[in-house]
Length: 99
Image (cartoon, rainbow, N blue to C red; front, side, top):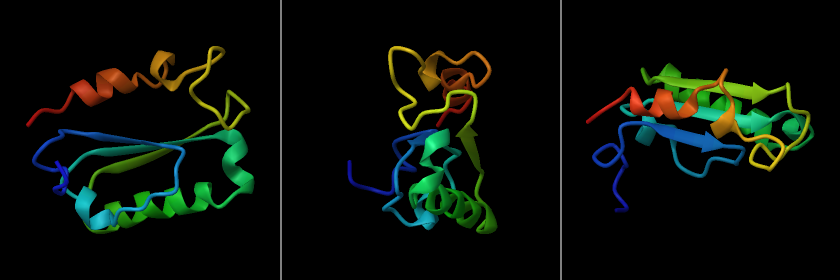
């Protein structure tokens, strides 16, 4: 289970965190990184954006979304969840890939 992930998953969603893995491990796996709007003040936003840029610069398929319509850091709550956001369609995006 602790391999590169490429042999286990057809896509990856990284949510509002400071990435600890090297972008090289994500090059062959479609990756979507999301962060809450109020995360701009901390270091997570630029590091996550740089992480996505690094994946793409190495030939990967990564995208970055900053959730601006919900002005909070927590993008999983009773009020709002990225999984229930019909504009993002994250679950459909994940299911569009297969191994």
